[in-house]
Length: 110
Image 1: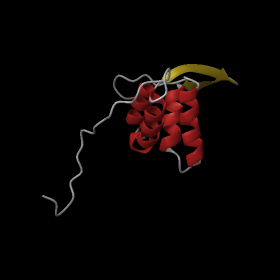
Image 2: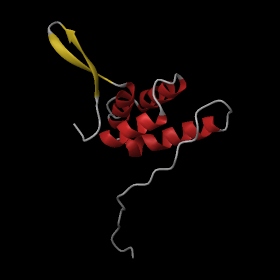
Image 3: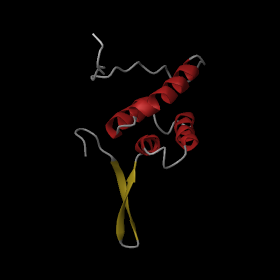
């Protein structure tokens, strides 16, 4: 478990076994993290539906994607969805640009 994040939303008991139930934002981030196992279209559709039905906010999705290592894969889809909906009145606001603390350095570059 990472500092400051609570992943477990609740736990169910099925057949005498405790089964963890996570938040929708964490589930969507997991779809992007393991999108080679599931289908890319399923991860994108999960993101669209979570935002459309207002089950998760862009901030929650971002936080869980960064914590789970899926932010680089989710960012273009989330940015496209939130910027497109920001132009329509009465919908969610535009998503702020994020910057990475790590910089890539290539051999031969100055």
